[in-house]
Length: 366
Image (cartoon, rainbow, N blue to C red; front, side, top):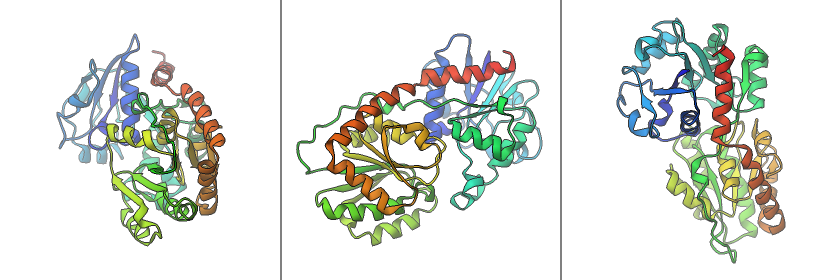
C-alpha cells in the first residue's frame, strides 16, 4: 500500500500537530506492507523536509506552493495531488486539509473543531477548516480524529458518516521516555509548569490568576510557562504584567525537546488550563515523566487523562488554584496521580497509533 502523508507541520517550531506527524510517520514506517512517503505543501521551505524525517522515510514529490494550492483546493478539485506525487494509493492530510486526487483514496485528520465551537479563539485563516473538512467528507474522504470526543463532534456538527469517522489516539511524545525525575527533598526550587503555544484557547490568563492565589501560601513556588508566541500574545503580556507575583513567573518562550525534558524533570505540578482540546499531548508527556497533572475538563482532556489528573472546570480560577494547592499539600495525592499516570500512558503508543491508522487505510479495501 503506497501511502503519502502530509508532513508540513514538521517544518518550523514543532506543535502538537508536528508531534502527531512525527509519531505517525515513525510508527507507520515500522509496519510491514506500508510503502510510506512524506510531502510538504510549501514553496519557501522546499527541500527542508528530508532533513526532518526519520531514517528510512523518503520525501516525495515536486515542490508544492502552499498559497495558490490551498486557494484552489478550497473551492475546486484541481490540481490533483498525483501531479506532484505520482501514483499513490492513499493520501493522508494530517491537518484538516487533504488534497484532491485522481484515483488515490483520501484520509483527513481533524484535531478539533475549535472554529465551530469557539470561533472567537481562532485566527481568521483557521475558520475555513470546517468547510474544507465538510468538502472532503462529501467527496468520500475518511476522517481520522485523535479522540472519541472529536469523532462525535465531526458526526454531530459536520454530518460525518459514523462508519467513516474513526478515532485513533495519538501516542506519547518521545521526549518523555528518558526523563529521570529529580528528587525534591524540600520546597525550595519548586515550580509549576505549563507548556503550550501562547494563545487564547490555552487560557493562561486563568492560570496566572490561579497562581496568584496559590503563591500566597507557597512563598517559594514559581510558575514556568513554555510556549511559542501565538496570536493573542499581547493579552498574555498584559495579564502577566498585572500579575501580583510577576517576579515569580518565568516565561521561557518556545522550547525544543531537550529543554522541555529538562523542565519536566524538575516540575512539581504540571498545569493545563485549556478552554478546549481535541486531545492534549502535554498532560500525557507530564504523566509519562512522573509529574502530577492538574487540568481542566476541556473537550477531550478527561477522556485522555482518565483518573491520572486532578480536574477543574474551564475558566474557574478558584477551582484551578484549589486543585494545584491540593497536589502541592498532598504528597499522597501526588503519588497516586503519578502512579495512575504511569499506568495510563501505556495505552498511548505510536505503534498503536500506526496500527489504527493502517486500519483506517484498509477501510478502502486495500
